[in-house]
Length: 435
RNA sequence: GGAGAGUUGGCAGAGUGGUAAUGCACCGGACUCGAAAUCCGGCGAACCAGGUUUAUCCCUGGCGCGCAGGUUCAAAUCCUGUACUCUCCUCCA
Image (tube, rainbow, N blue to C red; front, side, top):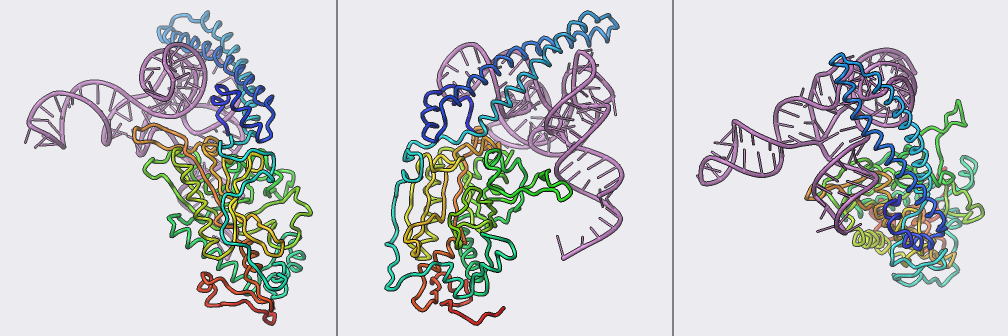
């Protein structure tokens, strides 16, 4: 959430910044007008309350002295009724103000490429050249089906579209990948967490998914009353529980920066993406992801974003997967982010790079929503900055391994770093179906 | 799922309608060569608004006893709803 004071005091600047993210300037005019009305009513209410406090004190004294106070009580009755009206007005205005504020995206950083969509994204750096083949590379969904390690038909029977069964060496590969990620992240100083996979609405609002993005997630309903949602939603990313772990808390300054990592499933409805990436592991309703979250002091967050991005890149480098890093444009970056680097891995069949990690500095945007603060050495409180990045999306990584490490005979070579995690298996070959 | 108890500052803990005791901790001072002990003083903090500055500081007021409503001139206290914690019972991996 943005700070109303910043908007109020830098209105033109705020309008320019948010215009690059598709926000109309009139929205800011409206919220500032509401804020002015609200503060005006608040001022009146506070004056009346000061009067009431003073007179009430006297009424108390009079009553103790068994004196008559009925005149004062009568006039205070009027004052109280005025206060009630004003407070109702204030509540109403605050709700309107919050309605708008909760739906405004974060201010983009000055360094972000400006543009409405991903065509304005800028490549920052590239690692290795795209994998070359002396045969026509297959799509990972065909590789997986032919090796009988991915089963799409059974998944569509059991669950529906955008689900999959991993089998045998496929399941082992998935497990190898996330264990490798967790081990590497831990070595880099991240503390491993196993969070809850269902979270309440306050948490969804704290990290910015709610109230604006209800359609993107799966919320639990009561079987007795399906119209009534329970206060529980399947996490779309481990970022939600990891950041909300600190919600409504004050962190000691010495503990910052805090680095945590977690493997979790990620549940996404993929509303509005019908027809896109209908085959393969790229776009699933349920996939596993290892997430990294950093909580730090404001002055550190830009350095921490670079570190976070390098941590994610390091994983792809160790796996030998070609990728490039892209700075997202103002229009393409996510709602909560001030700056985002996407890591895109090379996918040979599609002959292009595809997102496998998204590393964002959310500055104080989530911290303000979730009330996460720290106490500095002088005892002062400040909002923290929060960062999150995938390290990495597991399913997409498996897809990239299958495609980049495929051999002409249909087998897939296991990347060296994963061999120990695959119980020594160096190559995945077609086996007789065990089931 | 059933029954009961609880939620008050950094921590402990009192307060059943009149505007949040007390202790510990913490900060400042005295004493001391120094420290401890002792004594004196300060101290709930966050948030909001206004004034003053505009990086802070400071002043005034509001607010503030899990959260949200209600009753009242006045609510930590009474009423309603709700979240969470603990105990017991029941069930369960």
